Length: 243
Ligand SMILES: C[S@@+](CC[C@H](N)C(=O)[O-])C[C@H]1O[C@@H](n2cnc3c(N)ncnc32)[C@H](O)[C@@H]1O
Image (cartoon, rainbow, N blue to C red; front, side, top):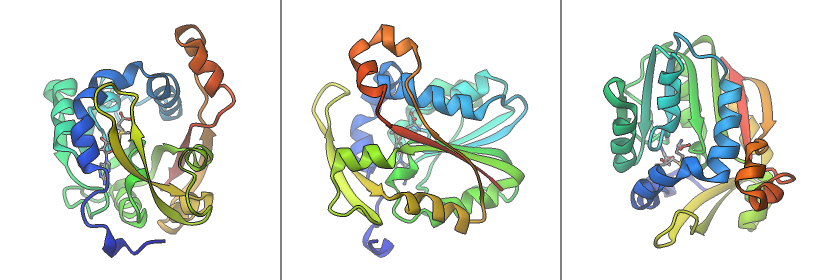
C-alpha cells in the first residue's frame, strides 16, 4: 500500500470538476448508474422516513434528492468537487445542506452521534486510506446507526484496470468516454477484498451484508446489449455495516 503522505489532493478532483456537468446530465440514464447502482443502493437503504442522513461523495445529488423525496428528515451532503456541489444544491433545492469536503481528511463539520444512516455511492473508491472516512462515519453515526455504501466491485475493478498486483491497494487509471465530449482521465484505486472488509472491522463496524449488484429487469428493454453484458458481470458491490 502506498504511503498516504504521497497523496495530498483528492486524486479524482480534477476529473470530476471536468465531468460534473456531463455526469449530472447523463448518469441517471446510464445502465451502470440508473439501472444497476441506484436501484441496488436504494433497495438496501429501504424506508427513510424521519431519518437524519449523511451522504458522502454526493456528486450532483441524485441520492440526496431521492432521500428527501422519500421522507428523510434531514440530509447533509458533501463532495470534494465544488462543481458537483453546485449541481447537488440545484437538484436538491431549498432543503440542501451541502458542503465541499474531502473524505480523505477529518470532517470537522460533523458532530458525534448525529446520523441514523450514512450513505455513499461510488465515492470512497477514490480514497487511499479508508480508516479516515470510516472513523469519521462511525463517529458521526448514532449507536446502532447504519452505513451503506457502494464501490466498484473488486472483480470488475480487477478486470477493468488489470492492476500490477492482485494484492493491497493499487493506484490505477482509465479514460472515461461514456459521458460524451472529451474523454476524461480518471485515476482510481483497485483494492482487494481484504482491503474492503478489514478497514470496516478496524473502524468498529459490524458487517451486515454484501450485495453483488445486478441490473434491474427494466434494462433488458431499455438497452438489451448492456443487459446482456451486465447480466453475468459483477459491476458494483453494496456494503451494509452497523455501528
Ligand atoms: C462516480 S461519482 C458518484 C457521485 C454520486 N455519489 C452518484 O452516485 O451519483 C464519484 C464522486 O465522488 C467524489 N469524490 C471523489 N473523491 C472524493 C473525496 N476524497 N471526498 C469526497 N468526494 C469525493 C467525486 O467528486 C464524485 O462526485
